Image: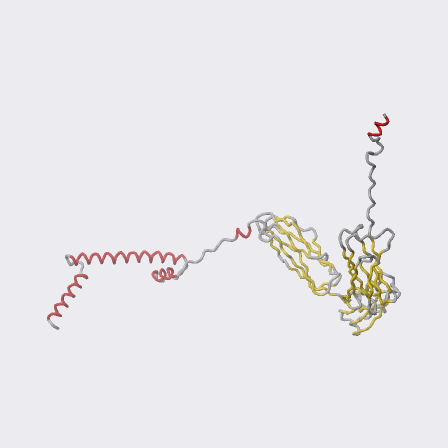
Amino acid sequence: MSKKNKKQSHQIQGRTKSVMNPTTPGRNGRTKGTLLLVVLLVATGLLAHARNALERTKGSGAVAGSNPLLLTATAAQQPPAPAVANTGSANTAGARIQFATPVHDFGKVKGGEVVKYTYVFTNIGDRLLEIANVQTSCGCTTANDWSRSVEPGKTGAIPIQFNSGNFRGQVAKSITVTCNDANQPTVVLQLKATIWKPIDVTPQLAALNVTSESPSNATTVRIVSNEEAPLTLSAPESNNPAFAAELRTNQPGKEFLLIVKTVPPLPAGKVQGQITLKTSSTNMPVINISAWANVQQTMMVMPSQISLPTAPLANARPYTISIRYRGTNTLALSEPAVNAKGVDVQLKELQPGRYFTLTVSFPAGFEIAPGEKVELSVKSNHPQFPVIKVPVRQPPRPAPTARPAPGRVGSATPPQAAAQEK
């Protein structure tokens, strides 16, 4: 080593000794004291922080012997837990309704049976709960006397009754409850059921439309047994001679077809009757099927007459007459006319051979003279209706009001005559 390097090495060693030796006088001594003081202050702070962390970890169940500094560092690295809002008072403020079972399923219900259920609810709020109304969605479901007012913490009841008489298969009905719960002023309840009938009759009404020209018609009613035992049916009987019924077997002991027919002659209008069959089922010993026939007119003219305003007409007036034909053959119309001057008639065939319209236009000032007979007419190819006629009616113009002679008011004497008499 050179002399220069040795000299520099001695100088560095001397500075190091002066820093590490606190008793070194002068400037180096003051530096040593300052550094020592800083080290003592930092150590004191770390020990105090570690002691506090140890106390906190003891309260939270930390394992004995854990390093306080490590626990403090770990706690400092984790983010703070989010605050949880207290919603208890918000959920119960005011009147609050809560149903134990908002949906009820009756399960399998025999057709025609009346079943009942009671919906129970609780006022989980802190004010009086008031039930204003209970509305059912169908007349088959009725709500009996329900709890009108329920104190906080108490329960109420809504009794429901369901009549399954007119239903089959899956059925669902709703009940709407109106109350003073601000969160849910209306609550929709639901009831379900599966309607079971020992014998299904489809349709339950045998409806037929006939005309006076074609009075014979027929419809089919399907009868199906849902029971395990084979079903036997008696011969059908009708209480009205206008209807006859024939029973056919589609599947022995299970499915049948009932053919309901009209028997002419039939009176005009609507005809009603009932078909009865006896069965081997103890659950449904008798089947009653209603029969209904509507005897329609072969020729329908609407309206049946034209009614005009009081004569004379202030403005031109159009009128439309419709003619519908329900006969067996097609209808042909021709030569539409009105036996009055200035009246125009237009014929249109909307449905070939079945549906027609006649548009009649009366001019302004049109007036039917007293005793005059005015009618719309159109010829047809139907032998029963060779000419279709629609009468035209119009009230006569009002009679003029009689005016008194000049100078005379009732029986009073005119002034000139009174002067002459004097």
